Every structure is written in structure tokens, then in C-alpha cells.
Length: 235
Image (cartoon, rainbow, N blue to C red; front, side):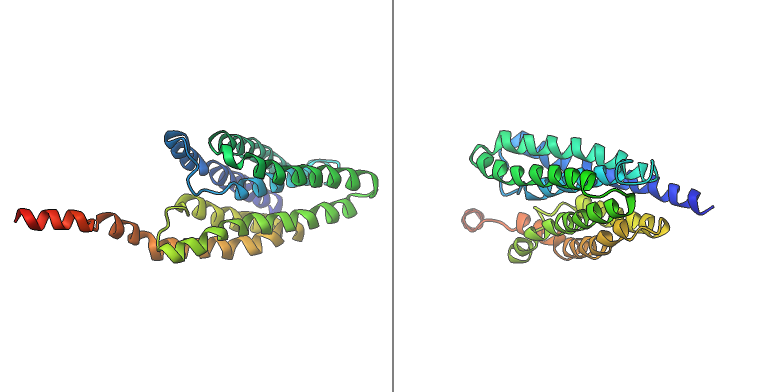
């Protein structure tokens, strides 16, 4: 019964993660339409790619026992494809930022390859491999869940949620909750721990969205001073 419940939560976690990884599609549709990345940052997508690579490796039989964590492998494999696509689109439309993106990508790739090599050749049992890869994954996950907080300062300063999409915040919270439950049901604190951080951070983003979501409409509807003067002159 417990295994069935764990599998069910894992499937729901996969569905939630799929929505989370696909949520930026709306953002990048806007980028392609305007042919500009505006004030969007590539950092969250690079950190998400790092996180997906590590947890794909974590779920493979080299680290985990057989296919006990197959839901982790499948969704993070899909996540790698999504994040690479977003990063490539970002680089295409942000020519001035390509060098910066490359400088961030090289350490990420290097750390992933180093983690794979060390866990394979320095540890000879699944328990220590999981502990090693999971510890690095924990740092990556906390960084990924924290990366949207870069926009929090801007949200509070401008009182606008334009650069904190609702669906991204919502699915971040939902996915964190489901994977935390999956980790606890699996008695795997390595999987549960990062989501203990992801849940409150996702909730914070949702609270900010609820607080400032009407501010955008207020600003948009407020007439420009020049327009007001024109209207007054016509009355």
C-alpha cells in the first residue's frame, strides 16, 4: 500500500514538475514575439538545468538502487530538454548576454561531470553515492528555488508582478509540496530536504503576487499627465 501511494505521489510530482518546467513557455513566447529578453534573467534556467542534471544522475541505477527512483529520472530528463531550450532561446535574443551565459554554463557543466566521476569512482556503494550526489543536489535545489527571489526586490520596489509569473510561482509551490511528500514516503531525506525550502519560497512568491497583482492594472489604467491635460483642454 505504501509503495502504491509513493508511486502515485511520484506520478503527481512528475505532472507538477512538467507544468513547472513548461510554465516559462509563456515568457519565452513573449521574448520571441518582442525579439527581446527585456529584464528577464537567465540565472533561474541555468540553475534549474544544474538541478535537473544532478537529480537525473541521482535517480539512475549507478547511484540509486536499480530503478527505485524512476519518477525522478523521467521528469528531470524532460526538465533538461526544457531548460536547454529556454537557455538557447535566451542566448539567441540576448546577444549582449551570451558571454555571461557561457561563463555561467561552463562551471555548471564542470560540476555535473565532476559529480558523476567522483560518485562513480570514489564511492563503491549506493548509500554513499546517494549521500554525496544528494548533498550537491540539495545545494542546487535550494539555489534553484531561491533564484526567483532575485525578482522579489524589483517586485517590492516597483509594486509590479510583471516579472514574477503566477503559474511559475504556483507550480513551484505545488511541485515542492509533492516531492517533499514523495521523499518522506520513500524515507529519503535527500529528496525531501530541498523541498522543505522550496515550499515556503514558493508560498512567498504567491503571497507577493496576491499582494501586488492589482497594482499592474492600476498603473496601466492611470492616464499619462499629457493625456489628462489634453482631455481637460477639450472639455
